[in-house]
Structure formats: structure tokens, C-alpha cells
Length: 258
Ligand SMILES: Nc1nc2c(c(=O)[nH]1)N[C@H]1C(S)=C(S)[C@@H](COP(=O)(O)O)O[C@H]1N2
Ligand SMILES: [Mo]
Image (cartoon, rainbow, N blue to C red; front, top):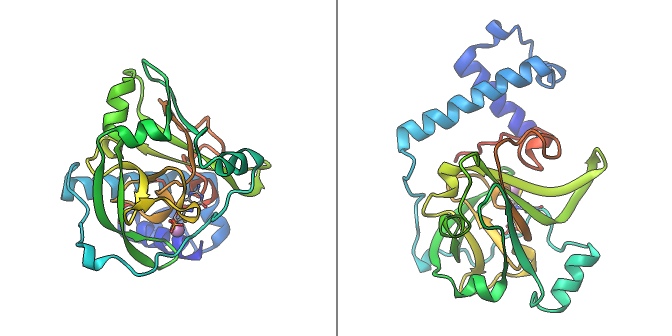
């Protein structure tokens, strides 16, 4: 958290200057609605700058098999404790289905077998957690763009939301459901996949079984694990805390570009 605020202060310092904002370096100010909205503008600028500099379709660096980390830390939830997930796990996810809905022409429910039967992309990438650790892993799964083309996005769709099976903590409005969202540029990026395999094996529970998002140009907290439902939406403000993700609702940046 302090790291994020530090980064935000840096953003303010570099794009708008603290004096324009009348900032004194007080944490309470960072939480104020006015400062929050200015921070959102600053964040939009970083995303636009990054995309202008590196391009919409630029690939995150890919590594070789020899680079794969011998151990890949699990972070956040490592075992969802809800009864529904425990039931799915006890049946080796044979009854699990990914629901794809919202602003799509043909809502769908896909079994793990159906997803595994679709053409897959395999990539070896570096995962960077905001807490300061990184690990290189190999991920295989269905390109999200292919799945979205299959269900057909309605013209109003602007974001894809990922709903997970775990509640991480229940501090905000009593809800702690983990969720994430990305825009359509990232949704259709070639390295954005719904991964069912890691390092050549089915995903382990600790890493998000049976299916997780990999969106390789962003930080670890965007890589939603335990996917249950994908929803196309026009606006993020109506979901949970309104900031597009579990950690975003707790102050992290929505566009977590690396
Ligand atoms: N559903 C869910 N997804 C999640 C999290 C979580 O707690 N729940 N933690 C996030 C964070 S902060 C990181 S760094 C990565 C960790 O992925 P890993 O456990 O495979 O290392 O998952 C992300 N996705
Ligand atoms: Mo993380």
C-alpha cells in the first residue's frame, strides 16, 4: 500500500506537481475525492503514454524454458475456502464451467474440457508482483480474443471483467470477492490468455485452478485466479467499489503497466 501511494506521489510530482494540487504529503489527502479524481487522470496519462511509447500490440518479453523459475511463489488466495469451490475441486473441476456473459451476443458456458480443446497459446513470461517479487513461468491457455470473438461482443462493450471464486477479505461493504478488469486493447492483445496450464501441467490450486487470466503487460494483481465468470461491460463504476478490481477498490491503480 505504501509503495502504491509512493508511486502515486511520484506520478503527481512528475505530471502535475504537488503545488498545483496543494498537496502537503498527507495520506488523508490522497484519499480525498478531489485528489482521487486527479490521480485517475494521472493514471490515464501513464496508460496513454505507455501505449503511445510501446504500442498497443507490443509483446511482453518472452523467455526460454531454461529461464523458468525453480519455484514460483503463490500469492493472495492459495486455496479458496468457499463450499462451491471446494465442491468443484473435489470433482477435479469436471463440473466447473466458465460463464461468459454481459454485453455479448451469444452468452456461453464452457467446461474445462471444452476450453482445453480450443487452440492454445503457450508463453514463458515474468510475473511481477507489486510487493516486490518476480518469477518466470510458462503459461498455456486460450487467447481471450478468440473466446470473445466466439461469443461476439456487443458494440457497447468496453471492458472485460473477471469474477473469481475467492473472497480475499471482507473489509469493503462486507464483500471481499476478488475480481479484475481490463479494457479491450488488453483483452485482444495476443498474450492475453485464459491459462489452464502452468509449466506444462494443469494449474495448481495455489496458482488459480482451474483457470486464470494472464495479461502480461501488467502487474501480478491483474492476473486473476480461480475464474468463474467473465462479463463484458460498458462501465466499471457499478461493480463492487467501482474501481474495476479488488485491489483497485483498495487504492491500487487500475492500469498496472509494468
Ligand atoms: N482470485 C485471485 N486472484 C489473484 C489474487 C488473489 O488473491 N485472488 N492475488 C493476485 C496477486 S497480488 C498476485 S501477485 C498473483 C499471484 O499469483 P500466483 O499465486 O500464481 O503467484 O495473483 C493475483 N490474482
Ligand atoms: Mo501481487
